Image (cartoon, rainbow, N blue to C red; front, side, top):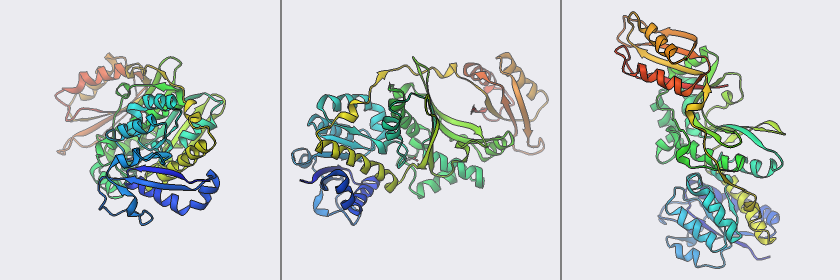
Length: 430
Ligand code: HSE
């Protein structure tokens, strides 16, 4: 059988891992596919850069035409990341009827449904296991293993950088800045760290998961997103006192018409499985109507874990091409435009920390504003000494309350003369 020829678009961290795994497992992969997998050409921006030793320099080019005009290329693998020029390349490959494997969560979150439509129209495949959860087979699980089930909800730790930072803060008392610097040194963080720490990377991944779990076509702009910049080591201590850990979560729930999608830090019960997923690990907890609960956890970032997912997609796509079933897997992704439930309708408990000047009447004013908005207090702690220069911390756990009421109470207190900084609010995920 003729080899299956791959056009590799980009060869950075993940691309290097793909080259390495294709090389190391060549014989076994050929036996799985029924033909050898061969890299035909590699599009890069900087050919002089050092690459993995398994990659022949003769394959490198900076000219995309050499790949798109080469009709012997059977499938494309896009590991450039970002929207431009990746989107144009993926569209061009699909328009040529050639299947695409991509690990590009941002591209899928912004243009995924249109790309799926395009692939279906051209009888090609669009495979994207590497876009969420690195090496965790979450896309396959949703697309194939749960084909006969209905996913009711999912809760995931899907940004390794946030999880690493929060874990370091909680276990070592590190500051946010020190923990972020460590994550960057270890190569977990995106080139632009705000994608990680402000929650956008997790939001991109959640939109991809919502496509598969709920068949939802949503606009990324309608997903409420919060990052972890304002969390301090002291919040982990207070959370632990109340019996919780702080995690950065992506949450999705199918409400029939609307879907609930949100990304934010959350207090999770200390004994829950997600509370115990530490460091750079990712985890996704699913709830299937027939299956019940299911947890997938593993390495959500890094060259080789993500490359494992990309190569698994290459095997599937190459096999489908050889068997004349290209496009079948992609046709199974059925998407419908769904509204995202407004966050202000959410009802949950909240953790509130007020850094304040310790004066008579402060507690009464905080309790008064909350009471006026119908938010009831469940527990309260005050820490700090009025004699010191530093503010005291008043920390509350509220009973379940509507988002819009908590927001209104915090607004009433925002400019109070006793407030040293605006209050920090973290939702509780029960
Ligand atoms: N920056 C991402 C993370 C890498 O921290 O999870 C994988 O998408």
